[in-house]
Image (cartoon, rainbow, N blue to C red; front, side, top):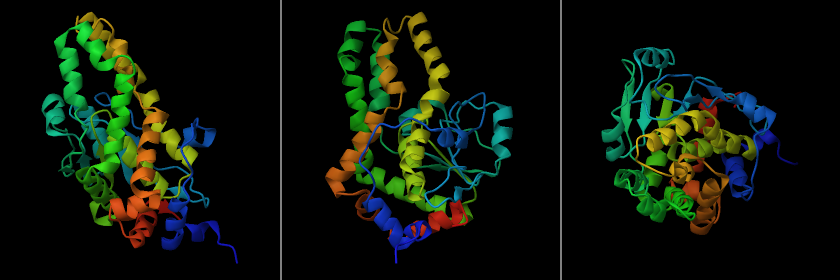
Length: 300
């Protein structure tokens, strides 16, 4: 008897689903994916979102109010902190490295929300970017970032999500936190909320059974929410005399399908399949996967 869609998302079904994950392909957000995105408007952060609302393969829906993603929270206003307080967050997982925290500041959180420092390496991206901009030297900036080098650096960053043991351990612990009802609602973020947070969110949605097109659309949506802010940053760099050609940093500011595909290519190279990356690379027992769905998916 053929398996139902719901059966495919049980412990054994999750393994089959991940093992059969499709090869990367460029996808554009469809109406369903776009309508599912719930952005939380704040003054001091631009990319905070509720991951709830997405439909899964079997017609269930990811719960609102339990899993959030965002950019750094060090510049929040008092009103922003009050807004986050209304979400009832149990914990906020900060994936930034100490250099980033020192530059942008520690998170401003509502009373009762537990801060969790869980750094995931950016492969030296933040430090190199500061060095390039701080040099004020257009020749050095071109040598560091021009000619496709910035985009190539980004694909290397994404591959470390798969290859670096410490990154895998941090990701595995975060996924377990999402499955733990004792944690309460959880928000995960890095500096821009697009790369380390983007990979974490993509993987979480995929494990919950959200179709590839929707999970990819959520990943790409960072470009929409960050566009105005990032343009102001580039303009400020030019007006401040730090960069003659601030367009050089666009590949570092954006998310691109090629970046996500680089991580997925590394998954296949290192583990053969997404299921083996999750089970061997991250060390998640297949029996842990239904716990994610039980907590985060309505009707699971």
